[in-house]
Image (cartoon, rainbow, N blue to C red; front, side):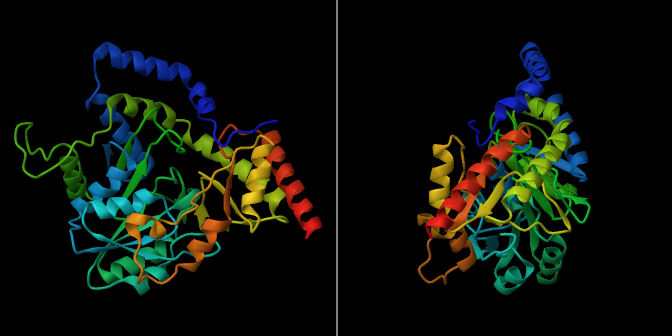
Length: 370
């Protein structure tokens, strides 16, 4: 039995008739940019995230950059980011002209900690971006305390955490603003690119919306600031609104699959710890092993697709290299040992067991050889 890493088709087929309906409506009305579809999805997404405002934008990277700009982050400022993250978190900082300051992550959860952030704050620090990686939230209570003490903004990069909770509160409602990607492979994915920022700060939401729409002011002919074009397409907003009704059920299915993986794999590989305060949505199911490369090869030869998140840490990528920076040992070690196994809402128990059986067989063979 082959097992895909991700099955987007199954998710779309579950809601195919509804997607077809909103597509036909969009073509019939020629409602392609802005309008009711965007407004209705923004309202629904804000309500889902327990926030007052949602601003749809073109993608998740723009969501971060626009939020930083709207908060007043400028060249010369510093923004603290975890070393274990996707490059978009950091490139968005660089696009504002600010300097990313990398901190290492907790070896158990692979997430940013308040201790690492507190040790990195300087007089130039303007913000910290807490990345909720693999679907598990970072410790927002502790990070909020550090940010408030330092007088800096706390931004959530929630691109992998749609629907997750920390201490019972929905991700998106815990920072000054939260940034989401709706890339098709996300827990809530569009049929193309898309993103959003959620916040309780009305003035901040207005600034982000203005920056994302060519800097327009009170009417479409006045442009009060230098802005850009970063709008969420109306058809993508309509698709997302359809899928939003399924998000909690899809996340529950991911948790069931993750629990079964845990049962089957715990004696053989190192699992990523889950904090008791967190309700993860398992965007990814990540294991660690010193045998990562041969395990990946064995699984793929058995028809099981895997992913690497991320084999080269961002701080070691060419645009972000700094020879004077000391090693970030946890993130660098993780890059050599992390492997992402198939995870999607429609994965069957039989598929999970197939993956686990193949992994366990390989690990037993390796141990026998050793």
